[in-house]
Image 1: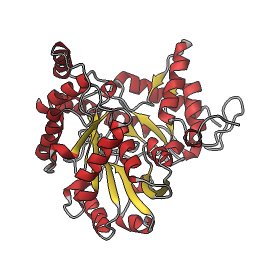
Image 2: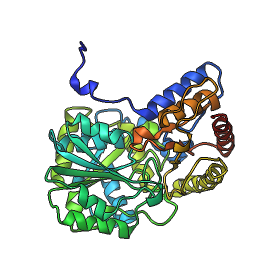
Image 3: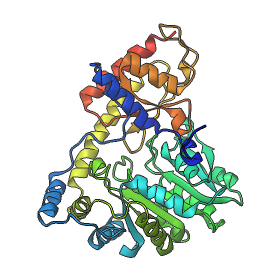
Length: 398
């Protein structure tokens, strides 16, 4: 009999972190593993942001910060939302957390009661449904596929809503697919939410600045539902600040206060030095972000062409983020050299790791078993070699 709580026993291990761990273990044995499993920019944090952290140390910003973040950072976030997104929030509606991941968890824990339903389009980031489980809610999935560019329609949304629906959560640009909802698509979803005033919308916009089609569009722009939208964003992807653990929400004052209350009983305020660096990141413009975006755009074209050269693999051209989510079900039922059958996407990812020495993540953890996720946050040379290895490994299956 387990001594652990039902709560922890009900959770699954993060698939992305698991594959990263397995890749590192193989590397430690001397194997040259190329990791395409982790969602982390391979760029360094910009110098002006690092210098701001050094300055914060020299100025002794080393004590507890206010639970929802320094007032100057919250105001910088509010200014960013107005300048870049034409969204009006004041600092009291911003809560800064230890990464966007904590922000997501805070929102779900402050909104969801046991048996509340949370609608999640698939594929979704691996932690979404697990966070709902932790809150004792129920995830309701809307399935999408390659043919729809992994985006839902208003009709699908309407059909998924029940009297128990409390929250809808999605990301745009999307992890793991790179799909981006345009203004018209968001407007059609907003019209559905107008008819259901008790449903909140959690909009994960962490990949906002890695967008290759147009300016970023937030569902919070529609005034009829804005008060029910909770924006989650952060500094990890745009400013290559993954290790700094700096994210935030923008929400109505009641929800912001509830997140402040919860955080005050868990982590309290996030790292004081990271916060001071975040102020400078938002106040000194997007030059470094745009340079990184150019590299991602080049890599996207490179990987797209290489994937299309692999027999049995189907893919679309993602509009944002730095992932591909190719369809690989044609390899299910095939056998490796030892006679082991590839039954699902997890088997295929493990096969690619052990035989091709490339770390990917099975799509089953994202809610779509017929796919795998590849991150192209790696050098051009690494990507060329990785896709070569994947092609050769897949060709060995029979």
